[in-house]
View 1 (cartoon, rainbow, N blue to C red):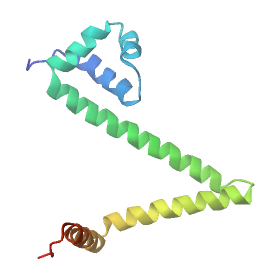
View 2 (view 1 turned 60 degrees about the vertical axis):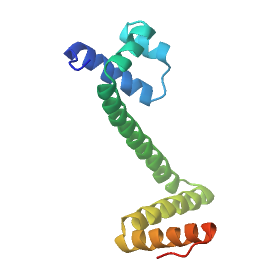
View 3 (view 1 turned 120 degrees about the vertical axis):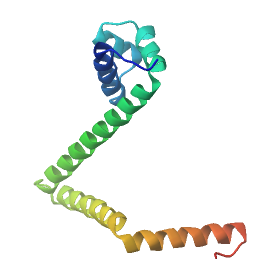
View 4 (view 1 turned 90 degrees about the vertical axis):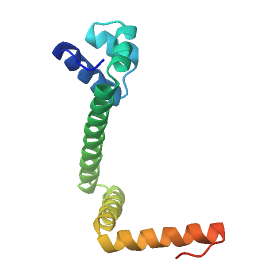
Length: 128
């Protein structure tokens, strides 16, 4: 099916949000007031819409989880316990270093060259 009604589109988007957060099909059906088979049928009837909605919902759920984890680490850095402050700071430092490394074009090129060289050694061929 190509055309999706606004009502089904809204329900499907809500289903995607709940699924992205780990809800079971019965829980999603209960929230929407529909039968599980009806909702799962929508995912098959509108696969392009479902895939788009799930990608969006997963991205939002991931972003929310990262924000919450970061907040927990920041709270840990304010702890009265020196060990907790130290461990939290170490984790934040590692995460920030990885993010910086991913954003550095030179680092990306070097990492790709290293990986290519490692694959070549494993296969017994030489990189070009």
